[in-house]
Amino acid sequence: MSEVQAIVRENIRNLHPYQPGKPIEEVEREIGISGVIKIASNENPLGPSPKAIVAATEAVLTGNLYPDGSAFYLRRAVSEFHDVDSERLVFGAGCNEVIQMLISAFCVPGQDQVLSHKYAFISYRVQTLAHGCEFVESDVTDVLGCDVDALLAKVTPRTKLIFVANPNNPTGAHLEREDLEKLLNGVPDHAIVVIDEAYHEFATVSYPDYPKSQDYAQDRPRLVTLRTFSKAFGLAGFRVGFGICSTEVAGYLNRLRRPFNANAIAQEAARAALGDTEHVERSTALVKAEIAKYRAAASDIGVVAYPSLGNFLLLDVRRPSEEVYTALLHQGIIVRPMASWGLKTHLRFSVGTAEQNDKAIAALKLVLA
Ligand SMILES: *Cc1c(COP(=O)(O)O)cnc(C)c1O
Image (cartoon, rainbow, N blue to C red; front, side, top):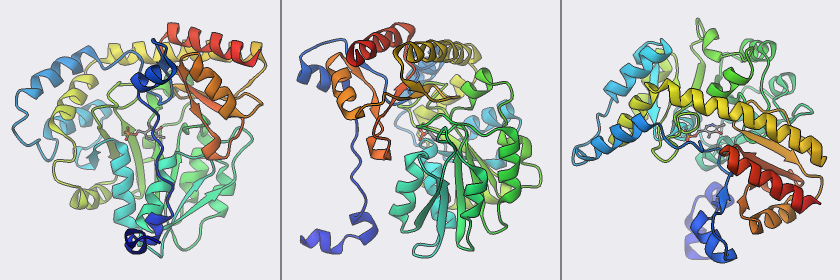
């Protein structure tokens, strides 16, 4: 064991290093082709809202100044947009940071447990283990979604946080209203329940019965809803997301929040994006149409497409997905292999532009033929 290895905290030593996807330019150089399409990170293929681009460009000019530490204008805009009290909002550099704040605020290392289900958003597990807490996973439904009964059966006196993404990434599965109600009603008094709605803009458009957790916020001080500007708003690179909490929970999270965590340019971009409903509508309409197209194509090719309310689709290609992933890469298509989740024949396709999706579908047909 090296000297550094000997002194790093054991829970950090045992974490798997994150393997980021390669930048498009690097893949093009390695394979020797141009025009590579990356549909691997659930990004918005239409780009940021044009209004956000203008606002961000303007904000660059005052980049010598620290951001507004309380995100005053963004807070007011989000508060009006979602009709929630501004004291209930906590902003982060993406909602990944809010996840981290929740774990830091509520979980005692070496003692408490964080609960989610198998194939959940990877960040819940990684950040829990990095913090030195135990991560507990329940079994899933046949479409790899949260089985609420199985989840609640895993609650112990040590459970402090319960994370469920609705819809879930990477599987796309969602909770029906009765599932969400059962979950919220089953949370023990000693736990916070976090409903991660990173994809709710797509979900509400593709599924009118999609249940929003904030409809249940009344008298539930231990409910937290996560939202982000990374997906439908197209601002993943800016890093801004937020939690809608009870005033009490928000108060604690804001105590431990790093100063100036949501940067000034991101705050302005997000505020402008919020006012650009047309861009969100174009983005969600694109996803709805293109998911239908992928689904039809999957059925043609004979691969299994899982249900999805997000801007991505999980496919079971019924052969080792690493091979299919590599073959697609050589066709200039980068998708997300799911082997590290234990899904050895699955790939996740993010929805790109119509043209990108056509190319991805054609490449998949070719590769599987
Ligand atoms: C993309 C995603 C997020 C958003 O993370 P940011 O840090 O806001 O970019 C959160 N939860 C889930 C389930 C996601 O897929």
